[in-house]
Amino acid sequence: MKKIGIIVGLFIALFAFTNANVQLEKKGESPETKHERRMAHLKKELGLNEEQAKEIDAIDTEYKPKVKEVNLQVQTARQQKEDLLKEIDTKVKEVLSEEQKVKFEELKKKEKEKRKTEYKTKIEE
Image (tube, rainbow, N blue to C red; front, top):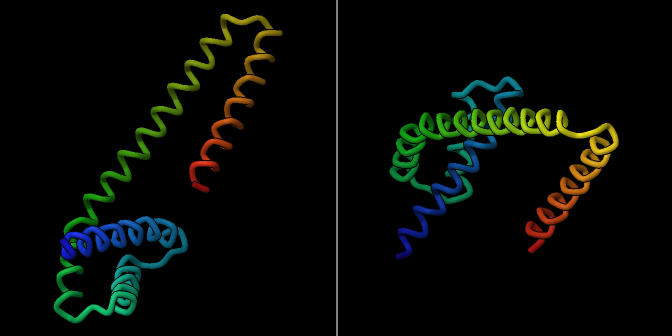
């Protein structure tokens, strides 16, 4: 049972580091440098021996392309959702009077603020 917990923890750590790498790519750091730095960090923080480091390196190498593909799918899905919502918004506004359009925009702003508040509350819990 402990091994499963450790493995799950490692995958979470690898996922977090992979997401952090997206930010670093924007800074112009090479993928090799990022990988070496990530592995050094894991070795230090987790106290990995060389065998463990090699195994985790292999896992990272195996899963990195899969994670990148999923990230791309998520970005694509977000864009598709955004496009659909804009399309819906446009069509709804075609039906409304000018006065209703103003009220509609106000309602959208209130709903957005409500979602932000609910999200912050969930994070704080």
